[in-house]
Amino acid sequence: MRQTTDHDRQTAITRARYNRIAPLYDAVEWFTEHTAFGAWRQQLWTGVPAGRVLEVGVGTGKNLPFYPPGAQMTAIDLSERMLARARRRAAALGARVDLRLMDVQHLEFPDNAFDAAVTTFVFCSVPDPVAGLRELGRVVRPGGDIWLLEHMRVDRPFVGSLMDLLNPLVVRVMGANINRRTVENVQLAGLKLVAVEELRGELVRLIHASGSLSDQPDAPSLRGC
Image (cartoon, rainbow, N blue to C red; front, top):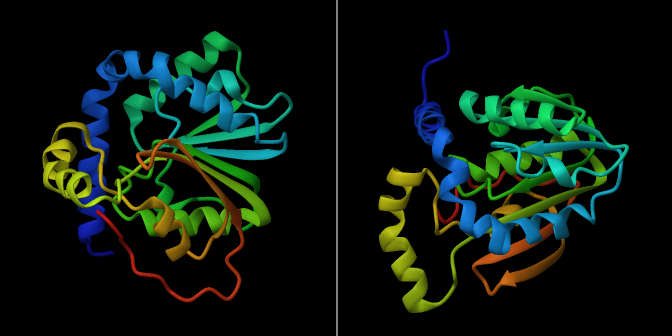
C-alpha cells in the first residue's frame, strides 16, 4: 500500500475546503464575477479553438457558457460538491461536457489526449502547482495550447510582502494562495510561454503556453506557495 505523503494530505485538505464552501461559492464571488471575472473568462475562451479541450477546475461551471461551439469538452474538478453544481449548471444550459472527479496533479488521461487545456483561477489552490502544470503538458499534444487565467503575487516590495504575510490566513479561509508565481511555475514545469497579458496589473494575468515537454529537466515542485 502506498504511504500517504504530505502532498496527499494537502490535497485532501484542499478538497475538504472546496467541498465546504461549494454552497456559498457563487454568492461570495457574485460581485467580482459580474464586474471583471466574467469578461476575462469570455476573453480567454475566444482564443480556444474547437477540438479536444480539457478544462481543469471546472468548479461550479462558470465557464460553461463560453465553451467553443463544436468542441469535444472534458472538465474535471477535485471537489465532489463543486462538481455536483457544475453538473446541474451543464444540464440547465444543455452543455455537452464530460464531467469527471479528478486531481490535476495526477490526471487519469493518456499522453497527448487533448488539443488544448484551460484553467481559470485554479493554480492558486493546487498544492503542487508545478506537478499539475507538468501533467497539463503531458496530456496536451505537442504544440497544443494551454491557457491559464490566474491571479498571482504582485512582484513589488511592499505589496508582495503583504501578500506573503496574509497568505496563510487566506488559504485557511478560502483555500487559495494569493502569492503564487504562476508565470515562473509555468516555466519551471517545462512549458513554453507564448504570451502573458496583464489584465489587472500584475495581479491577474492571462497566460498562453504551449504543451511541449520534450527533454525538459526535472523542476522544483513548488514556487511561491
